[in-house]
Length: 352
Ligand code: NAD
Image (cartoon, rainbow, N blue to C red; front, side, top):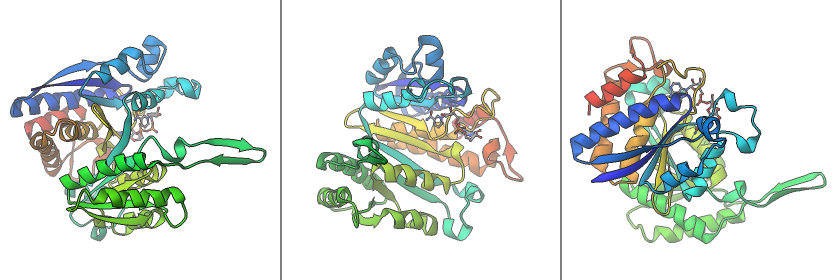
């Protein structure tokens, strides 16, 4: 089987970490008997330099014609003075829109070997953490009607039954592949849109009798994530609540260089990218941690191609590298072995 993947290295360390993820994908493909037709395309600052826009039509077209998209990171100081609508980050918005990506998946996984990186106490972390935040990405207050009237400004939160149903299904499907435990987060004691959200989630739940579903108010969820994060398996929530909670959940793992993400639409292709940016401060020095990108590639195998064994193999190889004490600078601690981007990539392949 050959999978078509559009690869967007982007800017800064995006380019460095993407090479490593591509190498890991090729190696895992060889081991498990599948392969990739990869098309490298430009987006972000490098596309502005070459084509005058962050998301050239050819790039979007190549992505739309692929089975999945792998993206490094975009942006950098060189383009910081451009007006908002011409900046490299516009490429991300254009891709989300052009690919109809409405679900954002942000796993917050804290490996046992990196326990000391978490700002939380060891007794709260236990033997590690694994929470998945599923955020609705194209509705809610970020897209509702907004404006100003005299001295007043307003933003509107609106959700349709259809929008809630489709994100709920994504979350239930993921819960089925994990511990079958779903927490829906809202503010149903105040917001009408949250009351609809709750009703719809409960209705969709009938299609998934094996999944235990609970509801929590967002203020409580923010607190519970630092008080007892282990109570969560999958969290599903609206665009704004998800924006905030996914950052909170990821930060309790303590390292931005370790965090992958996926954005999914109704049909393929999904887009997979690390949570971090282009890290201009360390770009070009071979220091970047490629693990977030490599684990994003594992998510691609799991969620776009249903290649569970191959995805597990990558994640296990990453754990083994960490267990053997190898670290990039961002996650280094005393007594650990400091290595660079390429070396970590090579070690992951060696451990596959
Ligand atoms: P950043 O994530 O690029 O960097 C924040 C800090 O974390 C830096 O000190 C950096 O060195 C470190 N870091 C990040 N990833 C790392 C890795 N893999 N290994 C080691 N260290 C790592 O965030 P920023 O500095 O706020 O943004 C830099 C640029 O990236 C900006 O232009 C921003 O707009 C852009 N950005 C892009 C994306 C994206 O493409 N999805 C996301 C966030 C920021």
